[in-house]
Image (tube, rainbow, N blue to C red):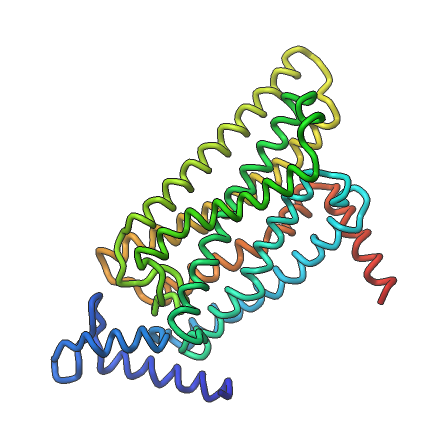
Length: 343
């Protein structure tokens, strides 16, 4: 389909919606005042989202596209630095394995999930092949976010054990154990998200123009389990970082020099903390909007802003490392130099 024609179709749909339809939560009202539930279900089955005002569509679509481009290029640079630059090389640092796991999750979202979202907004129809494709896409995105939370928790646990129990860390923690832990995050994330698939939570959301939790699905047991595990992960992350902070303060109270390894760990955890906060802002914003939508009608433009926040969250990680950690800035420069020499 030609892009210009698709945009014109989107404009026509939006005009028709403003003049002829009054959307309701369970169905929609026809032009003669007759409630037509079948039309609404067909509308969802065809993956046609609610039309958005054209000026907002242009602005949010541009921001969404720029965020995707920035995230793909930046995370690719971070991945190259982790594999090629000596201070980060995955073969010499256990925590680099966790960072690679984070980058792979972001690249999946930025290279597949968010472009599908963007296409849905621009074309007016989400480019899913069928309902199964839609559900699988929603499931994988949920697993990705749960894996990100668990990986951030593992980074904090890895750094805490390294500072607080260094002898145990040297004896039992290795690249292999870190890789196994990363596989575990994907397995656990898949298990946690599975009940949401089984109870029918996943489906097409016409306001988000994507496959996530369906608009007509209220709170489910699967969704509750996902929230509980997420909250436990947040509590665990906060507890580990607080205890590590107390260890560093104990060094200072004794007027002892903080070990170099501990200072490096604090610098890394500072970056991880910023990324963690960005992820929480993204998830909480989305959750609050969905909760408010249960009681009042929310314009589709608000959901569009949520989509942009989601893509920005996945695209800023490499920038956070650059701004907050001098080691990463140095690694980026060396990686860029190597890439330019090869070109």
